[in-house]
Length: 314
Image (cartoon, rainbow, N blue to C red; front, side):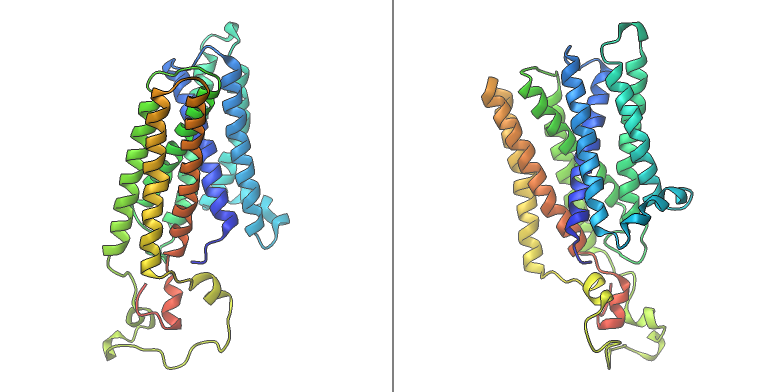
């Protein structure tokens, strides 16, 4: 598939935003957040801003942005519609959590709001992943590792983002550095198994099965369906060389996982402004690596329609 930069930016940035909201909400439920309401409010504002910026970027991929509101009406059958409904529904929940952070009279209201906000954040990322994981025509997306990958990468980027905010406020959250390292390890493992799965998985369709002519022998293309470039070739038939894919995978593993882990460990040892700078570097490196990861996610996907344009399998 042709990598759309607006969608790449959307899924990475909004995923980090929802991951940040989930991690902060988890801290509220477990009682591990610093006694500093404005830190919590900053985390919520950053989460909603990232989700909003990411969602706004997705409009650039629409042919008719003015019709985007119609997506909200198809939530019974469309994961894209469910994602939009959850994204909008998460805003008032997150704002309610921010409002209850220091209001003693509401008792456990902040815990209730945190549980709902965390659940909505996780559900939104889940819905995003299902948009791709349910497409049977693309083997690389209709894969059991896609949804765990989206969730793990969102948790990783969110934890690193929250670690950065905590360091800037010169606070400490017990277990946060450990959560960052654990989420990095989990995300790297899920990504590794995803790559191994799509490299070793059998093709779900071939030219013989697509045309129904397999009983007559091997099928090959005599003439292309079109004599010039078209939408299907540009969007569905994107190709990335195997050697380039391997190099980009190495970049993702090093820049997106190894470097953030090293910076996170160093930030845990350092103090003051140095710790904040190292935490910010870890977060920036993770986002940069995730951009490359998401580009590969689209570039390595092959739609079965390419079988009618000369591809032997998909």
